[in-house]
Image (cartoon, rainbow, N blue to C red; front, top):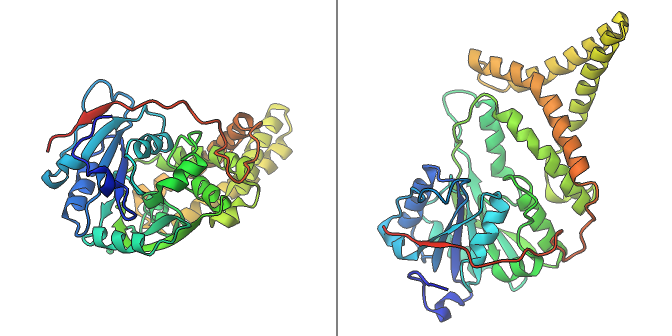
Length: 362
């Protein structure tokens, strides 16, 4: 294995040594993240692993400007475009024999004292500490009410085990098999891993380091696309049981209401096709009332601009059937998934090979 400016093995194996793993799709925000790491006070990582998870990563090199202080520490590996769970697995396995792996998203900005605060977090860890969370701050506009998407992103600040900034002990990752790669989106893979390490007898604690997670730009239909996470919720239930919501501190969402509203819409169409106008009208009224309630619940706390209101109305019509479709898909795809035992990863370990590496020049 080729080493790129890493510390000697004895330094890497120290109890407080850490590597940083950042999965990336090549977004410009990666440069801001690396600049913040370079400016941060405190001990440097022994290595920074950037996992290039672009679908077309084999065609063009990753466009990234690595600050000079981090140049000798930084390595790029290819992730295979199989999602953030698989990308993080490729990253921590390529990081070397280092005690701690700190996972960062490519759109976060570590604080100015992040390195010193991380050192305090690691020093406070006991021998059974598997992971240490960070404090996540999501800046919201001060001059107006936040939009629906901004409020959605702000929920990351209270997420229990978010991997936007999460330090994991390598030994714990090895024991439970790392992230479950069936989670293909940046959703629930963090809760799944934390529940597995807790079941294996480890502890997850809160740290003092702070990281900012800006609200990234999004189009009108982003709230519809995120409904794909309903399939991941089905997988979580198969793996961890029906009480995983409370153990993970995760909000239950509106799926029961979406099921009812979608059923009313389907019933209205069926009754109309069967030429039962009164029944069709009654079912349509239920659908309209449910859709209006959903739209108003999203409009009320927002800025109430014309564009936001139009977006809320349109997406409130589409979200319920989209959520139900993904939930049904999850029921089919994961119908034979067995529950986990305390140490299982939920899937036989994948054969692993040394990832392709690129030297990074500052």
